[in-house]
Figure (cartoon, rainbow over the protein chains, first blue to last red):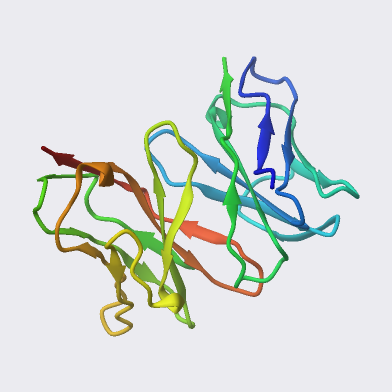
Length: 114
Length: 109
């Protein structure tokens, strides 16, 4: 069984640029959630995708967008990067969109915005 | 809105000492509470959830709705328990989690 993987591991961008982060969910999981973890903070929910549809969104502006593909892998896109977007971005997959299912986290992508 | 508060950033104890990591939550409905752990150089992983009422690695946590708390306890800490611990709250139909800021547990030999 393959766990959740994320790419790239690290990324450096400048303010105003756009970035795409990728996540492959654990085998058999059809739900992916994205979280932002700023330094010294707990993860903060960005949004969730269930069977290619957005299934809930946190308090993030529209320049944070996502996609889920038929194989249930996912992308997080951030436009017009700001300095405060510097954070660790975590992806988590679960068996379904139901709350009872355990979320399995990936190792994260560290984004630095200069 | 829901909120999770972990009032301490760091807890340092000696091996064999009891441990209590505090967690308080704010939510008007029926909450589901979790503890997640992140060991050094490892990914975030689920430690336990209140609905399971189980003990994992000697840790237990009881949901106290009157005090809106879900403190994590272990009677005798081990060095391998040293890690970052996050309390999390799930609300709503999807599996969105609201996390606290986390606490670093350091167990000294």
